Image (cartoon, rainbow, N blue to C red; front, side, top):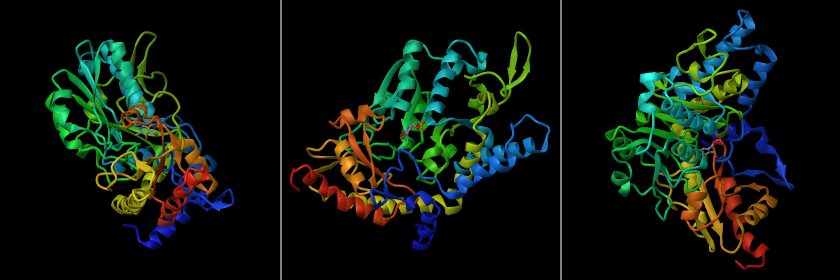
Length: 424
Ligand code: PLP
Protein backbone atom coordinates (compact mmCIF):
# COMPACT_ATOMS: atom_id res chain seq x y z
CA UNK A 1 0.00 0.00 0.00
CA UNK A 2 1.25 3.52 -0.71
CA UNK A 3 1.22 5.73 2.38
CA UNK A 4 -0.65 9.05 2.19
CA UNK A 5 2.70 10.85 2.02
CA UNK A 6 3.91 8.62 -0.82
CA UNK A 7 0.68 9.15 -2.76
CA UNK A 8 0.94 12.91 -2.32
CA UNK A 9 4.51 12.76 -3.64
CA UNK A 10 3.40 10.60 -6.57
CA UNK A 11 0.63 13.02 -7.49
CA UNK A 12 3.05 15.91 -7.37
CA UNK A 13 5.15 14.08 -9.96
CA UNK A 14 2.34 14.48 -12.52
CA UNK A 15 2.10 18.20 -13.38
CA UNK A 16 -0.84 17.63 -15.73
CA UNK A 17 -3.02 16.49 -12.83
CA UNK A 18 -2.86 20.06 -11.50
CA UNK A 19 -4.83 21.48 -14.39
CA UNK A 20 -8.46 22.41 -14.50
CA UNK A 21 -11.15 21.44 -17.00
CA UNK A 22 -14.22 23.66 -17.37
CA UNK A 23 -13.09 25.53 -14.26
CA UNK A 24 -13.08 22.33 -12.18
CA UNK A 25 -10.08 20.33 -10.96
CA UNK A 26 -9.27 17.59 -13.46
CA UNK A 27 -10.31 14.13 -12.30
CA UNK A 28 -8.45 11.83 -14.63
CA UNK A 29 -10.11 8.43 -14.80
CA UNK A 30 -8.86 7.30 -18.20
CA UNK A 31 -5.60 5.60 -17.22
CA UNK A 32 -6.69 2.46 -19.08
CA UNK A 33 -6.64 4.35 -22.38
CA UNK A 34 -3.38 6.11 -21.66
CA UNK A 35 -1.51 7.03 -18.51
CA UNK A 36 -0.34 10.46 -17.53
CA UNK A 37 3.45 10.94 -17.43
CA UNK A 38 5.54 11.78 -14.40
CA UNK A 39 8.08 14.55 -14.80
CA UNK A 40 10.95 12.08 -14.51
CA UNK A 41 9.84 10.40 -17.76
CA UNK A 42 9.42 13.69 -19.59
CA UNK A 43 12.84 14.78 -18.30
CA UNK A 44 14.51 11.54 -19.41
CA UNK A 45 13.18 11.98 -22.94
CA UNK A 46 14.06 15.66 -23.05
CA UNK A 47 17.51 15.13 -21.53
CA UNK A 48 18.30 12.62 -24.26
CA UNK A 49 17.47 15.19 -26.94
CA UNK A 50 19.25 18.00 -25.13
CA UNK A 51 22.47 16.18 -24.30
CA UNK A 52 22.90 12.80 -26.02
CA UNK A 53 20.88 12.66 -29.23
CA UNK A 54 22.62 10.36 -31.72
CA UNK A 55 22.02 7.28 -33.85
CA UNK A 56 22.37 4.21 -31.65
CA UNK A 57 24.47 1.11 -32.43
CA UNK A 58 26.21 2.89 -35.29
CA UNK A 59 28.65 5.66 -34.68
CA UNK A 60 32.12 5.40 -33.22
CA UNK A 61 31.75 8.81 -31.60
CA UNK A 62 31.09 9.51 -27.94
CA UNK A 63 27.52 10.72 -28.34
CA UNK A 64 26.55 7.58 -30.22
CA UNK A 65 28.10 5.46 -27.49
CA UNK A 66 26.23 7.34 -24.77
CA UNK A 67 22.95 7.14 -26.67
CA UNK A 68 23.42 3.40 -27.18
CA UNK A 69 24.17 2.92 -23.51
CA UNK A 70 20.98 4.76 -22.52
CA UNK A 71 18.91 2.91 -25.11
CA UNK A 72 20.13 -0.53 -24.07
CA UNK A 73 19.99 0.47 -20.41
CA UNK A 74 16.31 1.25 -20.89
CA UNK A 75 15.78 -2.17 -22.44
CA UNK A 76 17.42 -3.79 -19.43
CA UNK A 77 15.24 -1.71 -17.09
CA UNK A 78 11.96 -2.60 -18.82
CA UNK A 79 13.00 -6.26 -19.09
CA UNK A 80 13.89 -6.36 -15.38
CA UNK A 81 10.51 -4.80 -14.58
CA UNK A 82 8.74 -7.87 -16.03
CA UNK A 83 11.32 -10.41 -14.86
CA UNK A 84 12.83 -10.97 -18.31
CA UNK A 85 16.36 -10.85 -19.70
CA UNK A 86 17.24 -7.89 -21.97
CA UNK A 87 17.63 -10.26 -24.92
CA UNK A 88 14.04 -11.37 -24.49
CA UNK A 89 12.58 -7.88 -24.93
CA UNK A 90 11.96 -6.47 -28.39
CA UNK A 91 11.06 -2.81 -28.81
CA UNK A 92 7.88 -2.27 -30.77
CA UNK A 93 5.74 0.80 -31.31
CA UNK A 94 3.09 -0.63 -28.96
CA UNK A 95 1.12 -3.73 -28.09
CA UNK A 96 -0.72 -3.71 -31.41
CA UNK A 97 2.58 -3.70 -33.28
CA UNK A 98 3.90 -6.54 -31.10
CA UNK A 99 0.88 -8.73 -31.82
CA UNK A 100 1.05 -7.99 -35.55
CA UNK A 101 4.76 -8.78 -35.49
CA UNK A 102 3.99 -12.22 -34.07
CA UNK A 103 1.16 -12.92 -36.50
CA UNK A 104 3.19 -11.85 -39.54
CA UNK A 105 6.28 -13.72 -38.32
CA UNK A 106 4.17 -16.86 -38.12
CA UNK A 107 2.92 -16.24 -41.62
CA UNK A 108 6.50 -15.86 -42.78
CA UNK A 109 7.32 -19.16 -41.10
CA UNK A 110 4.37 -20.68 -42.97
CA UNK A 111 5.90 -19.41 -46.22
CA UNK A 112 9.23 -21.04 -45.34
CA UNK A 113 11.19 -18.13 -43.81
CA UNK A 114 13.46 -19.17 -41.01
CA UNK A 115 13.81 -22.69 -42.42
CA UNK A 116 13.54 -25.79 -40.29
CA UNK A 117 13.94 -23.91 -37.00
CA UNK A 118 10.85 -21.81 -37.76
CA UNK A 119 8.69 -24.71 -38.87
CA UNK A 120 6.97 -25.02 -35.46
CA UNK A 121 5.45 -21.57 -36.11
CA UNK A 122 3.98 -22.55 -39.48
CA UNK A 123 0.22 -22.88 -39.73
CA UNK A 124 -2.07 -24.52 -42.23
CA UNK A 125 -5.57 -25.90 -42.77
CA UNK A 126 -6.66 -27.94 -39.77
CA UNK A 127 -4.55 -25.90 -37.36
CA UNK A 128 -6.39 -23.78 -34.82
CA UNK A 129 -5.80 -20.42 -33.19
CA UNK A 130 -7.65 -19.79 -29.95
CA UNK A 131 -8.54 -16.31 -28.72
CA UNK A 132 -11.14 -15.17 -26.20
CA UNK A 133 -14.33 -13.15 -26.29
CA UNK A 134 -12.73 -10.61 -23.97
CA UNK A 135 -9.98 -9.53 -26.35
CA UNK A 136 -9.15 -6.00 -27.41
CA UNK A 137 -9.28 -5.90 -31.22
CA UNK A 138 -5.47 -5.79 -31.17
CA UNK A 139 -5.39 -9.37 -29.90
CA UNK A 140 -8.21 -10.57 -32.11
CA UNK A 141 -8.01 -9.07 -35.59
CA UNK A 142 -4.34 -10.02 -36.31
CA UNK A 143 -5.21 -13.64 -35.43
CA UNK A 144 -8.38 -13.59 -37.55
CA UNK A 145 -6.29 -12.30 -40.42
CA UNK A 146 -3.53 -14.85 -39.88
CA UNK A 147 -6.11 -17.63 -39.86
CA UNK A 148 -7.62 -16.32 -43.09
CA UNK A 149 -4.20 -16.13 -44.77
CA UNK A 150 -2.99 -19.55 -43.68
CA UNK A 151 -6.18 -21.61 -43.80
CA UNK A 152 -6.10 -22.17 -40.03
CA UNK A 153 -9.33 -21.73 -38.11
CA UNK A 154 -10.15 -19.45 -35.22
CA UNK A 155 -11.85 -20.60 -32.03
CA UNK A 156 -12.49 -18.77 -28.82
CA UNK A 157 -13.06 -19.09 -25.12
CA UNK A 158 -16.40 -17.43 -24.35
CA UNK A 159 -17.06 -14.87 -21.64
CA UNK A 160 -19.46 -15.32 -18.75
CA UNK A 161 -22.32 -12.95 -17.89
CA UNK A 162 -20.04 -11.29 -15.35
CA UNK A 163 -17.34 -10.57 -17.93
CA UNK A 164 -14.84 -13.25 -16.99
CA UNK A 165 -13.58 -16.11 -19.13
CA UNK A 166 -15.59 -19.31 -19.02
CA UNK A 167 -12.75 -21.75 -18.48
CA UNK A 168 -15.08 -24.72 -18.11
CA UNK A 169 -14.83 -25.15 -21.89
CA UNK A 170 -11.03 -24.99 -21.94
CA UNK A 171 -10.46 -28.70 -22.68
CA UNK A 172 -12.86 -28.58 -25.65
CA UNK A 173 -11.72 -25.26 -27.10
CA UNK A 174 -7.97 -25.80 -26.72
CA UNK A 175 -7.37 -29.16 -28.33
CA UNK A 176 -4.95 -31.25 -30.34
CA UNK A 177 -4.57 -28.94 -33.36
CA UNK A 178 -4.44 -25.70 -31.33
CA UNK A 179 -1.20 -23.93 -32.17
CA UNK A 180 -1.67 -20.54 -30.51
CA UNK A 181 -3.69 -19.38 -27.52
CA UNK A 182 -3.86 -15.58 -27.49
CA UNK A 183 -5.39 -14.25 -24.31
CA UNK A 184 -5.68 -11.02 -22.42
CA UNK A 185 -4.25 -10.87 -18.92
CA UNK A 186 -6.72 -8.23 -17.80
CA UNK A 187 -9.74 -7.10 -19.77
CA UNK A 188 -9.78 -3.45 -20.80
CA UNK A 189 -13.59 -3.57 -20.55
CA UNK A 190 -14.53 -5.72 -17.58
CA UNK A 191 -11.29 -5.45 -15.61
CA UNK A 192 -11.32 -9.22 -15.04
CA UNK A 193 -7.88 -10.72 -14.47
CA UNK A 194 -7.45 -14.01 -16.29
CA UNK A 195 -6.69 -17.16 -14.35
CA UNK A 196 -3.70 -17.98 -16.51
CA UNK A 197 -2.37 -21.16 -14.92
CA UNK A 198 -4.99 -23.56 -16.35
CA UNK A 199 -4.78 -21.90 -19.77
CA UNK A 200 -1.00 -22.13 -19.91
CA UNK A 201 -1.10 -25.74 -18.68
CA UNK A 202 -3.71 -26.78 -21.25
CA UNK A 203 -2.02 -24.92 -24.11
CA UNK A 204 1.34 -26.49 -23.36
CA UNK A 205 -0.25 -29.89 -22.93
CA UNK A 206 -1.34 -29.73 -26.59
CA UNK A 207 1.87 -28.04 -27.75
CA UNK A 208 0.34 -24.57 -28.35
CA UNK A 209 2.07 -21.26 -27.79
CA UNK A 210 0.59 -18.83 -25.27
CA UNK A 211 0.54 -15.16 -26.33
CA UNK A 212 -0.38 -12.81 -23.51
CA UNK A 213 -1.82 -9.33 -23.96
CA UNK A 214 -0.44 -7.75 -20.81
CA UNK A 215 -1.41 -4.15 -21.65
CA UNK A 216 -3.77 -3.77 -18.71
CA UNK A 217 -1.80 -5.85 -16.23
CA UNK A 218 1.87 -4.81 -16.49
CA UNK A 219 1.17 -1.21 -15.35
CA UNK A 220 -0.98 -2.32 -12.41
CA UNK A 221 0.25 -5.64 -10.98
CA UNK A 222 3.57 -7.04 -9.81
CA UNK A 223 4.44 -9.40 -12.64
CA UNK A 224 7.05 -11.90 -13.67
CA UNK A 225 6.29 -12.81 -17.28
CA UNK A 226 8.62 -15.83 -17.48
CA UNK A 227 7.17 -17.03 -14.18
CA UNK A 228 3.67 -16.97 -15.68
CA UNK A 229 4.86 -19.55 -18.18
CA UNK A 230 3.68 -17.63 -21.23
CA UNK A 231 5.66 -17.85 -24.45
CA UNK A 232 5.14 -14.30 -25.68
CA UNK A 233 3.65 -11.18 -24.14
CA UNK A 234 3.05 -7.62 -25.29
CA UNK A 235 2.51 -4.34 -23.49
CA UNK A 236 2.48 -0.65 -24.34
CA UNK A 237 4.68 2.02 -22.82
CA UNK A 238 2.06 4.76 -22.95
CA UNK A 239 -0.22 2.87 -20.58
CA UNK A 240 2.54 2.60 -17.97
CA UNK A 241 3.70 6.21 -17.62
CA UNK A 242 5.99 6.09 -20.65
CA UNK A 243 5.78 8.06 -23.91
CA UNK A 244 3.56 7.09 -26.81
CA UNK A 245 5.08 5.22 -29.73
CA UNK A 246 6.99 2.58 -27.81
CA UNK A 247 6.01 -0.82 -26.49
CA UNK A 248 7.53 -4.20 -25.89
CA UNK A 249 7.27 -7.76 -27.07
CA UNK A 250 8.56 -10.32 -24.59
CA UNK A 251 9.45 -13.74 -25.97
CA UNK A 252 11.21 -16.76 -24.57
CA UNK A 253 14.76 -16.57 -25.90
CA UNK A 254 14.73 -19.83 -27.88
CA UNK A 255 11.44 -18.85 -29.50
CA UNK A 256 12.73 -15.41 -30.52
CA UNK A 257 15.78 -17.12 -31.97
CA UNK A 258 13.67 -19.44 -34.12
CA UNK A 259 11.02 -16.89 -35.13
CA UNK A 260 11.66 -15.27 -38.53
CA UNK A 261 11.73 -11.47 -38.70
CA UNK A 262 8.98 -9.39 -40.27
CA UNK A 263 10.55 -6.05 -41.08
CA UNK A 264 13.94 -6.24 -42.71
CA UNK A 265 16.59 -3.69 -43.64
CA UNK A 266 19.19 -1.80 -41.68
CA UNK A 267 20.14 -2.46 -38.06
CA UNK A 268 18.94 -6.08 -38.01
CA UNK A 269 21.56 -7.70 -40.25
CA UNK A 270 24.95 -9.37 -39.90
CA UNK A 271 26.21 -9.96 -43.43
CA UNK A 272 24.53 -8.66 -46.56
CA UNK A 273 25.51 -9.65 -50.08
CA UNK A 274 23.67 -8.78 -53.26
CA UNK A 275 21.71 -12.00 -52.96
CA UNK A 276 21.64 -13.01 -49.32
CA UNK A 277 21.49 -11.69 -45.78
CA UNK A 278 22.11 -13.13 -42.36
CA UNK A 279 20.31 -11.63 -39.39
CA UNK A 280 21.48 -10.48 -36.01
CA UNK A 281 20.31 -12.46 -33.00
CA UNK A 282 17.18 -11.29 -31.17
CA UNK A 283 16.12 -8.75 -30.12
CA UNK A 284 17.89 -6.78 -32.91
CA UNK A 285 16.60 -9.25 -35.52
CA UNK A 286 13.15 -7.72 -34.97
CA UNK A 287 14.23 -4.08 -34.83
CA UNK A 288 14.81 -3.01 -38.41
CA UNK A 289 15.47 0.66 -39.04
CA UNK A 290 15.74 3.57 -36.66
CA UNK A 291 14.11 2.89 -33.31
CA UNK A 292 12.15 5.30 -31.08
CA UNK A 293 15.22 5.95 -28.96
CA UNK A 294 14.00 8.83 -26.80
CA UNK A 295 10.70 7.07 -26.20
CA UNK A 296 12.47 3.86 -25.19
CA UNK A 297 14.62 5.85 -22.77
CA UNK A 298 11.42 7.36 -21.34
CA UNK A 299 10.01 3.83 -21.08
CA UNK A 300 13.07 2.79 -19.08
CA UNK A 301 12.59 5.76 -16.76
CA UNK A 302 8.92 4.83 -16.26
CA UNK A 303 9.80 1.23 -15.40
CA UNK A 304 12.40 2.46 -12.94
CA UNK A 305 9.90 4.89 -11.38
CA UNK A 306 7.29 2.16 -10.89
CA UNK A 307 9.92 -0.32 -9.74
CA UNK A 308 11.21 2.14 -7.14
CA UNK A 309 7.69 2.67 -5.82
CA UNK A 310 7.23 -1.09 -5.70
CA UNK A 311 4.53 -2.77 -7.74
CA UNK A 312 3.11 -4.62 -4.75
CA UNK A 313 2.32 -1.24 -3.18
CA UNK A 314 1.01 0.17 -6.45
CA UNK A 315 -1.28 -2.85 -6.90
CA UNK A 316 -2.54 -2.61 -3.32
CA UNK A 317 -3.23 1.10 -3.70
CA UNK A 318 -5.18 0.62 -6.93
CA UNK A 319 -6.98 -2.36 -5.45
CA UNK A 320 -8.22 -0.32 -2.52
CA UNK A 321 -9.49 2.41 -4.86
CA UNK A 322 -11.15 -0.20 -7.07
CA UNK A 323 -12.97 -1.57 -4.03
CA UNK A 324 -14.16 1.94 -3.14
CA UNK A 325 -15.29 2.66 -6.68
CA UNK A 326 -17.15 -0.64 -7.03
CA UNK A 327 -18.74 -0.40 -3.59
CA UNK A 328 -20.06 3.04 -4.54
CA UNK A 329 -21.17 2.39 -8.10
CA UNK A 330 -23.17 -0.74 -7.31
CA UNK A 331 -25.31 1.35 -4.94
CA UNK A 332 -26.36 3.71 -7.72
CA UNK A 333 -29.76 3.01 -9.25
CA UNK A 334 -29.95 2.74 -13.05
CA UNK A 335 -26.23 2.03 -13.36
CA UNK A 336 -25.03 -1.39 -14.52
CA UNK A 337 -21.40 -2.42 -14.23
CA UNK A 338 -20.11 -4.49 -17.15
CA UNK A 339 -17.86 -6.88 -15.33
CA UNK A 340 -17.24 -8.28 -11.89
CA UNK A 341 -18.67 -6.05 -9.17
CA UNK A 342 -16.28 -7.30 -6.50
CA UNK A 343 -12.65 -6.30 -6.44
CA UNK A 344 -11.39 -9.87 -6.65
CA UNK A 345 -9.01 -10.85 -9.45
CA UNK A 346 -9.75 -7.53 -11.01
CA UNK A 347 -7.95 -4.37 -12.04
CA UNK A 348 -9.32 -0.84 -11.73
CA UNK A 349 -11.11 -0.70 -15.06
CA UNK A 350 -14.83 -0.22 -14.50
CA UNK A 351 -17.12 -0.05 -17.52
CA UNK A 352 -20.75 0.76 -16.99
CA UNK A 353 -23.97 1.83 -18.61
CA UNK A 354 -26.48 4.35 -17.32
CA UNK A 355 -30.03 3.34 -18.08
CA UNK A 356 -31.52 5.52 -20.81
CA UNK A 357 -28.41 7.61 -21.49
CA UNK A 358 -25.97 7.05 -24.32
CA UNK A 359 -22.37 6.56 -23.06
CA UNK A 360 -21.27 9.61 -25.06
CA UNK A 361 -23.76 11.74 -23.16
CA UNK A 362 -22.57 10.21 -19.88
CA UNK A 363 -19.01 11.17 -20.81
CA UNK A 364 -20.03 14.71 -21.68
CA UNK A 365 -21.91 15.33 -18.44
CA UNK A 366 -18.96 13.99 -16.44
CA UNK A 367 -16.53 16.08 -18.49
CA UNK A 368 -18.48 19.21 -17.55
CA UNK A 369 -17.53 18.33 -13.97
CA UNK A 370 -13.86 17.93 -14.95
CA UNK A 371 -14.08 14.13 -14.93
CA UNK A 372 -12.39 12.30 -17.79
CA UNK A 373 -13.75 8.85 -18.60
CA UNK A 374 -13.59 6.89 -21.82
CA UNK A 375 -16.71 6.17 -23.87
CA UNK A 376 -17.31 3.90 -26.84
CA UNK A 377 -16.56 0.23 -27.40
CA UNK A 378 -12.96 0.54 -26.14
CA UNK A 379 -11.74 -1.43 -29.19
CA UNK A 380 -13.54 -4.48 -27.87
CA UNK A 381 -16.82 -4.90 -29.72
CA UNK A 382 -17.32 -8.64 -29.12
CA UNK A 383 -17.40 -8.41 -25.32
CA UNK A 384 -19.80 -5.47 -25.49
CA UNK A 385 -22.04 -7.47 -27.78
CA UNK A 386 -21.80 -10.45 -25.43
CA UNK A 387 -22.90 -8.25 -22.53
CA UNK A 388 -25.82 -6.89 -24.52
CA UNK A 389 -24.63 -3.34 -25.28
CA UNK A 390 -23.00 -1.58 -28.20
CA UNK A 391 -20.80 0.63 -26.07
CA UNK A 392 -20.16 1.79 -22.52
CA UNK A 393 -18.56 4.46 -20.40
CA UNK A 394 -15.41 3.42 -18.54
CA UNK A 395 -13.64 4.80 -15.50
CA UNK A 396 -10.11 3.47 -15.07
CA UNK A 397 -7.66 4.03 -12.27
CA UNK A 398 -3.92 4.50 -12.20
CA UNK A 399 -1.01 4.98 -9.90
CA UNK A 400 -1.76 8.64 -9.14
CA UNK A 401 -5.53 8.18 -8.65
CA UNK A 402 -6.82 8.95 -5.17
CA UNK A 403 -9.99 8.74 -3.12
CA UNK A 404 -10.95 12.29 -4.14
CA UNK A 405 -11.02 11.15 -7.77
CA UNK A 406 -13.24 8.20 -6.95
CA UNK A 407 -15.54 10.24 -4.73
CA UNK A 408 -15.90 13.02 -7.31
CA UNK A 409 -16.87 10.43 -9.90
CA UNK A 410 -19.37 8.74 -7.57
CA UNK A 411 -20.90 12.11 -6.71
CA UNK A 412 -21.22 13.20 -10.34
CA UNK A 413 -22.61 9.97 -11.80
CA UNK A 414 -26.06 10.30 -10.16
CA UNK A 415 -26.46 13.72 -11.80
CA UNK A 416 -26.36 12.22 -15.31
CA UNK A 417 -29.95 10.98 -15.59
CA UNK A 418 -31.53 14.08 -14.02
CA UNK A 419 -29.51 16.18 -16.50
CA UNK A 420 -31.51 14.51 -19.27
CA UNK A 421 -34.78 14.79 -17.34
CA UNK A 422 -34.87 11.08 -16.56
CA UNK A 423 -35.15 11.33 -12.79
CA UNK A 424 -32.77 9.81 -10.24
N1 PLP B 1 -4.72 -4.64 -25.54
C1 PLP B 1 -5.39 -4.04 -24.55
C2 PLP B 1 -6.00 -4.90 -23.47
C3 PLP B 1 -5.51 -2.65 -24.53
O1 PLP B 1 -6.18 -2.07 -23.53
C4 PLP B 1 -4.92 -1.91 -25.57
C5 PLP B 1 -5.08 -0.44 -25.62
O2 PLP B 1 -6.16 0.09 -25.42
C6 PLP B 1 -4.23 -2.58 -26.58
C7 PLP B 1 -4.15 -3.94 -26.54
C8 PLP B 1 -3.58 -1.85 -27.71
O3 PLP B 1 -2.54 -1.07 -27.25
P1 PLP B 1 -1.83 0.00 -28.23
O4 PLP B 1 -2.94 0.79 -28.85
O5 PLP B 1 -0.99 0.79 -27.31
O6 PLP B 1 -1.06 -0.78 -29.22
